[in-house]
Length: 579
Image (cartoon, rainbow, N blue to C red; front, side, top):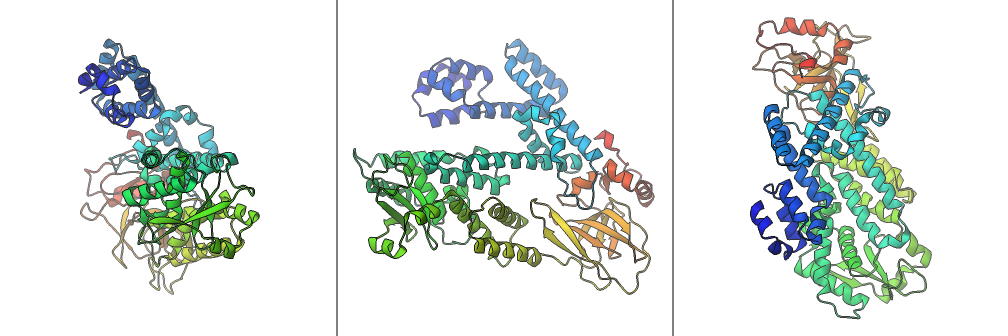
């Protein structure tokens, strides 16, 4: 394939840019072919030299090169040298050094970082900023993603946990930077601001979707090109709006989602894929297309509907000006737009100050966030922990970053936020002689902190201590977990155990004597809990190996664990250094 492309470069030049990009993403194209194609013409050189194509090619080749054995890797390096192509080798060797730096840093964190009860497991900012991780920014995020998604589930748990923490830190830094960039834009570029905010919000609320490479602009550009074909010279603002209306709603089938109160309607990538959204996200798309056709539309956050405004002679005026006549369009029946009539405008009694407030960037962003938060609050129950975390993220941004929001709305959201904390609490163990715990989402992180509410039993039989790392089963509901901490109670004669539950959530159950240890290979199992790596380095098939700092906190548990599993000598106690 690469050879045919190289020999028929004239055919390649005649293709549209989008088609060329798809071809160049092929795994069959090597560095030499790309280099030769760069020499064919300036247009190909511009396309190939884009960061996206070079990055994708490096990414693919790195995976092949990185996952092969060391001997094969050295042979491949020799082949690259003989071929005179040292660029790939230099990139890979540099990246390998960065990966080793990242791994060393994560190992140091897992060895030295004190795990206090109040600690949420996130790495201290100063530890990252003062490290040499920042030297590897080019490949840092992908290296962390590879560690997080490592297929080997039983080993390097601690490294994966802290990789996730560092990854979250840098994502947070990136998003804060983009937030400041968007909110600090000059008002002259306001026509693009709603598009930028929607993309930023989409990426922030959906970190697992990997939307960094989602091409939002391609859909907007395509719609604008098709709408432009329907316009003639001297087209009016309404002519442009009508053309966009025809392309967006008639040709492409965009419409208001029947499931109007789903929070997913507020995520731009989801609306572009499904062609279904709510008025504000449809307005974002409509405005983005209009801006590409030279028409300035500005958002207007009316109380009961979201509209777009424009002014006569908009091509000569940017933003909202009292000297020009303002018109408004709204979406009706879910699949078309219409003008707001003069009678409706007289009832609204809009003055210049009101219009500026309704169109302010803070008001519009607050409404986007409120749609997500309120739609999640209104649900009787949340389908997944991701929905709860999405609610927390949107509400946090709404309460912290948007000071322009109405105080009554802010207060009602905050009250609903507190209610959600209590309403989603789970009584994992409500028996009369055990501890009853509640979990709440901690504000400012996606972690969970524990509130312990003790219900002291009248009698407390002595229970032999179980070491950290042992798999246990709850007698009350047969759920499984792993002991991650224990302490002797101040009143009880038994131990209080902190158990990471097998529920794929960040929850710890604190209990007294309602657990039974699993002491055979038939009973033990892997525990799915995001906090596993905070306390344990790997799973050896019978129990979890604590990280070094936990072994220091519980020095006698290692020997005790050996005695419990003395009948299973084939399972060795693997040290941290062998990982």
